[in-house]
Length: 125
Image 1 (tube, rainbow, N blue to C red):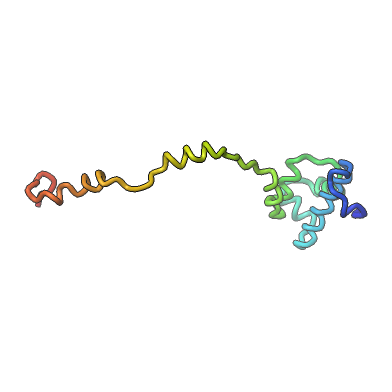
Image 2 (tube, rainbow, N blue to C red):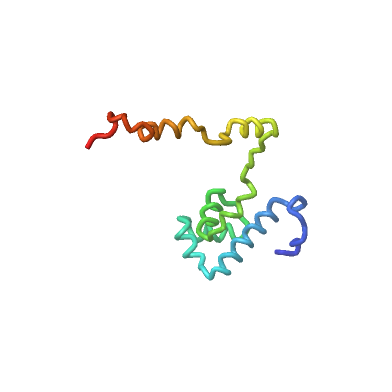
């Protein structure tokens, strides 16, 4: 099964890759000391479907996701996250639009009635 462990995935066949994924799932399940029955029930799949996955047989992507979720292994999918790159020009434009300091006009307006004790409109006892 793992005779090709050191080979990169690029040179493996699709069935060998599926077997590697299945072997990994099985080893993680055993490491967590969980049975096929408990994982399959929590994932909402049949035990035979989980067995197919662990043997490297063809299953749906949804099945794989459900099992990864139950095994708390969804972090493995982070390699698929797309990181949008921003050009230096766009980054500079965004930085230009951000406020660099507070305006004195707003502060003055907030305390205008406090500065003028003769202004009785705002304060009534």
